[in-house]
Image 1 (cartoon, one colour):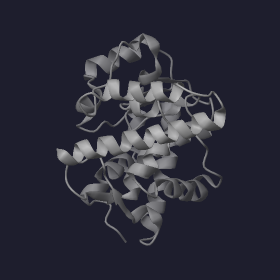
Image 2: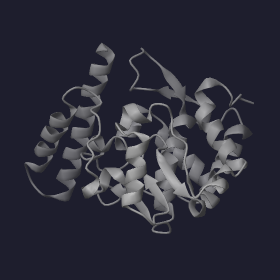
Image 3: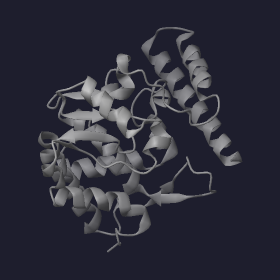
Image 4: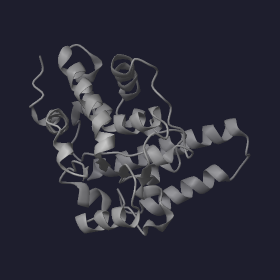
Length: 253
């Protein structure tokens, strides 16, 4: 059996312990943020606490760090499949085994409120009481067999190190939160910093000039026929162009 205490699995192990020990039950709201939260979002702890206080009464507060890339996409996993080949099949596998149903689709922009990368969220006991069970079942599935798709290696394209790869489970787990929210519809009151107009927040750029570059791609999408099929193709092409451009910049260091 794979050792999920190995470095690539440490974040998953932290969530597993948090859920299994019901650590969330000791606080009104709780979450686990990686040390890179400040770098990815530009938010201090005081800033996200202020956001929560300005938007009281929600079950879950999402701090999605990469809204620019999703602004040109057709759906939540479009860019993810380019970055981490196999992630869609991995999520299909988890949903069939853990949720025992078909994976939900997160379409953009209509489902944007559910979108969150990096497990950057703070949630109430009410949410954790159910999501904690999902986390436990996910980890049981991960540990149940070595030959399942979750242990396959997939590229980590935001790294400046050449050919860095991580287990697919790392990225599947990260995207599972959004699918879990979509799966349950409007069961929990949700607010997402990235899609709250009065939040007064601008995410850090992943590369210099990302903001105008994505704005240019968005303008090219809008410049043409409003036929739904053609818009979908233009969005798909824009996502591919963005991915290749960003990948090349990261490769240069």
